[in-house]
Length: 415
Picture 1 (spheres, one colour):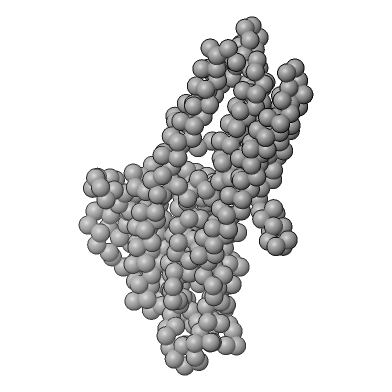
Picture 2 (cartoon, helix red, strand yellow; picture 1 turned 135 degrees about the vertical axis):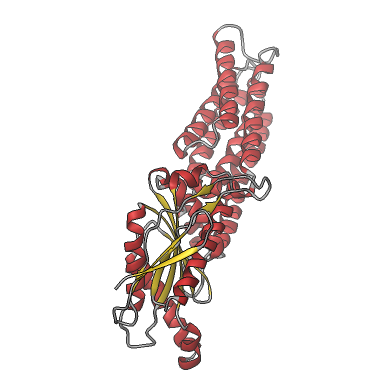
């Protein structure tokens, strides 16, 4: 149990992971609206209390509550019109909320009513459960507990104090605001850990298909895709079935693990690499187009490097679109990646037909039409050439391009 809690406590919480989870499921705007409504309701409650005999006294207390109300409504509008805040702005939202709730409740002339108002901390507690880590939740809970303690003293031992009422209400608030949220966060952390495990291929330790789509969105949003290009490579090990039939599945598994390790050793650390099943691997990266050919060739050469057990080569297909075009496309990210994977997969099969152990880069555009509207534009890929060597012997390079209008392909040969 101690090790389990230590592992939970050491987890940092991944704000972007949660946000990126909502986006492809068309939940992002709904969650933002829900947060905006909850935030606005806190402001509405404060505004109503201005007119209550138990609310703030005239003068500065009323002005402070009114200012807090305006700030809360502005925060609600930000959730609606400005999308997801950065991690830093999200943390500032929680800090301001904590300070504001305590300050507003302290302005009420009836401290027992103010003590009831501290239950508003639960809104921020639940927000932290899902969007921030255990340490942020602990800091928030410590502030809430400190605020409750001050109010318990004021209600129980102030003028006309009622210690029993103060302690009872304080303990009830502690259960709601302080005790329950960590339990919920532990449960969410466990489910997320299981989800992360379900995104990993158990044999190679790479991501699987589901993991690729989850992490590719984060990569593209964080890596400055507008100033570079989005590259998708599909790699398939050549004659892998023959290796399984000749050496057995145990050796076949070793070949897969070795290939995964070699691919990782020659690609950028931020690239997203996955095994799609069988002997097929997919790489997504955000790099300048001019570097894509060199990366593909490094991968091909690394896989084909000499080895004592079951040497293997790979056929590689590449698709590429400009980052600005990718971000401007009217398709969901997952749908556009699907299309790029299909294009790269077709290029990979052309590499098989060209003799294996080579790279084919597709020059056709990627259709960005959404499935619902059927309208869209064609994003041109920016690729230029294809290369490869086979089994240590230099063979004739095959250049391949595609007519952008007809989609027909033409092959240019050189010595």
